[in-house]
Length: 377
Figure 1 (cartoon, rainbow, N blue to C red):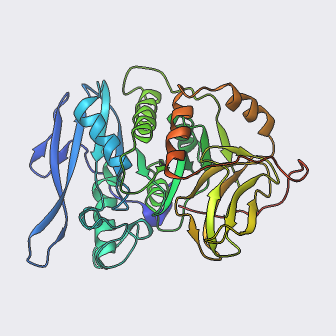
Figure 2: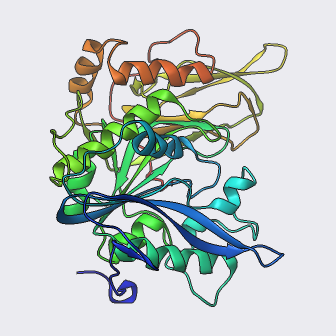
C-alpha cells in the first residue's frame, strides 16, 4: 500500500483544464510551473497520447535535472519520428521537467536547489518545493506507472542502467521489462521523484545513461527501446518485451576515488567487466611521472566514470557495481557480443569520451574482495 503521507487524489489523464483528450488523440498541453520576475507564466510542454481503449497511464519524463537532456532526445524521437501506435491506455510525455534549469544549462533551479530532492514538495514552500508539488499532483497524480530519464552528473558518463526498488513487485516488473543489462536495486534518495512516486502508489523506475548536455544516439536507442518494451509489457502497444543479452541486478556499488592529484589515463570503459586487482586508471604527474594505479577491489561492472582526466584527492573516478556471483557467466556472454549489438555500440561510443589505453590484467588473486555500498542518483 502507498505510504499515507504521500497519498493524493487521482486526476484524470484525459482532462487538462479545458482540454479533453479523446480516444486515439495526441494533444499538446501546457503546464504552468512558475512565474518569471516580470510576472509572466512559465509553462512546460506536455504531450498526452491516448489509445483507442482504456488502460493504464504511464508518464515518461526527462530533464528533471535541467542539463540531462539525453532523455529529452528520446522523448522527442518517440513523439516526432517514431509515433507510438498506442492501442490502450495513455502516455504522458514531459520532454523537460526542470524548464528553469534547462534554460540555464544547469542541473539546478535558480534557487540553487535540486528538484530531485524536493518531492512531494509544498504549495507554500520554496520555488523548488512549489514546482515539486505541482509536478507531484499533475503528473504523478494522473499516472499508474512512471519512467524517468536521467544521465550522469557533470563531467561523468554512465553505461545505461535502470534504478529501481526491486522489493516492490510492480517496480521490479517495469525494471526487468525495460530491457537494460544492468539494474541497480534501491529505493532512491529521500525526496527523489521516483521514490516519492512509488510511495504514492505509482511504481516508477529511472534510466541513467550517458552524459549531460548531449543527445547520444546509442543512449536514445536504449531509452526508446526500453520505453516501448515497458509499454508492451503493460499491453499498451504491440510487440514483445526487450530481451537483453544478459540482465544482472546490482545490490552494492562503490566509487573508486583518487588518493592523489594528477592526470589520468584510463584502462577500462563504462560497461566493462573487471576483476579484483584489475587496473582502472593510472594517475601520473603532468610530466608523466607515475603517481599510482587505481585498481578494482572486487569483481564488478563499470557503471560509470569520470570524463575529466585532471583530478584532486577524493575525486570520484570509477563507479563499480559489484557482481560476485554471476561474474564468469557475464564474462562469457560479453565475450560473445559484437560491436554491431546495441550493447557493443554503446560500449564503444561512450569510450570515445575518454582516452582508454593499455588494458591491463589483474595484479592480484581472483577472490571476491570487500567493498561498501554507496547510494547514488
